[in-house]
Amino acid sequence: MPIKVEIISPEKVLVSRDVDMVVMPGEEGDIAAMPEHAPMMLLLRGGTVSLYDGDTVTDRYFVGAGFADMTPTRCTILADEAVPVTEISIDSATARLEELTEAWDAADKSDVSRLEGIMSKIQSVRAEIDAGVGH
Image 1 (tube, rainbow, N blue to C red):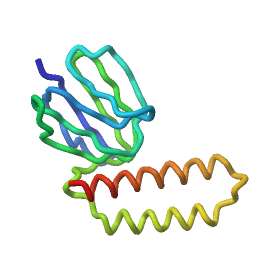
Image 2: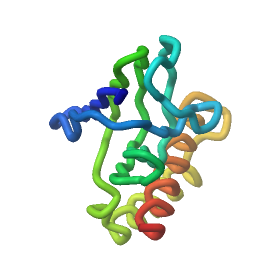
Image 3: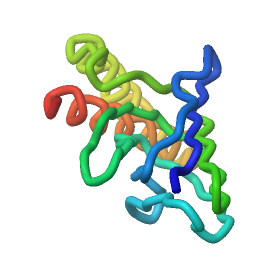
């Protein structure tokens, strides 16, 4: 019995199909959504979402952050950004990492919420680079 997965970014619906399992990067660690999973909502960190048919990964998508809504029959991922891993531009991601690192260096170190936002973006871009290099 499959589970319906949807990966939605602000620009478009990237995926809408049945799979056997979805493994996604939760804030507290990776988590799998499978048929009959207890209902749950969770925050996502930047990382790779892997779609499985049987024991085989068929597709991988990078998500920048967002959240997932799981039910026994469905997994909906709403991502700030989402792209197939095969379409990641390492050069573009590296340039963004350099800009974020400069922003970190220039930021007022007493502005904790700004620092947390920049660090979250840095971690996401690092995960994007890792996903792009690993494909």
